[in-house]
Image (cartoon, rainbow, N blue to C red; front, side):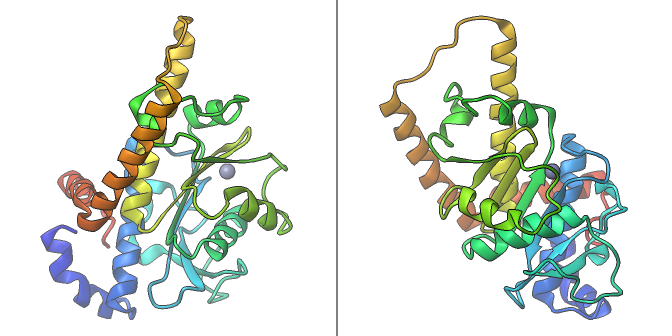
Length: 262
Ligand SMILES: [Zn+2]
């Protein structure tokens, strides 16, 4: 977290009548929405990013339905419970499919505190390919045999889809391709989830570009693919420990004057 935000976190938390931990979670999530906007990973007001409350593991935050991603701030977040209901009935309106998807995933994955769901062109394209993400780039290899699939069931407005979302994601994978729809990423923190998402997006774009060239694709051996995936897993542990990348991303937002910490 940048120095200016860190120094102010307790004051801002008191001003908003929330704990310092909750305020930091809100700030990180708002930053993630702002970064998605700058990365071009948005789809109007649709799609949704969430973080679990550090004060209550049965609560999480989503943006108000009507806000575009660049308009999302820490104080604008709406608190939801793991049944998908507003904690405060008067707090506003969230995307109904978002409440179902995020409550299902956070309920099933106690190791994950952040869920990102989005519709990028490359992500939708790869989700629609029978073989999903191909092991054809260094970015893709970290996800080798580590991507879940969820069959398309229509817009996720039926609470019965919670069960298949949970079973399809499974206990360990951090990425799930939502068939003919988009991507879902989970992480232990907002920074980790964003980092995974960034890597996966690059892998998807590279795959589509390589396929568009029409050239025959070359793949590393399965042994090298698995070796590389394990190397990334060890590296991500390091990134989680020091959150260097996330601090850099917040610094970028500060340079741009993004109002995420308001
Ligand atoms: Zn969606």
